Length: 78
Image (cartoon, rainbow, N blue to C red):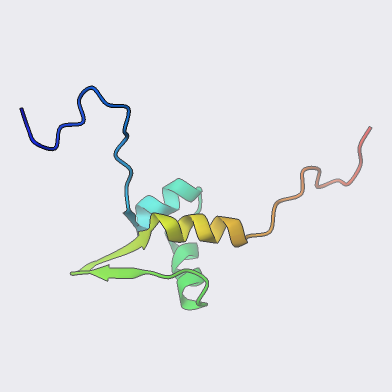
């Protein structure tokens, strides 16, 4: 049996970081938008070797700092 086996436990393995394309898929946006946010200083990227990664906590911070979308763009309720 492997030492790091999670068999029989309820723990899920969570990712600590994502590549730019993976992070874009998670957020349903384009990779270009993430690079634009990084250039503007609104998103911190991490280099690991030749890979550019976005920490999962950074994605959560970005979402928490963003302005919520309006529920009804027309502004009317019936």
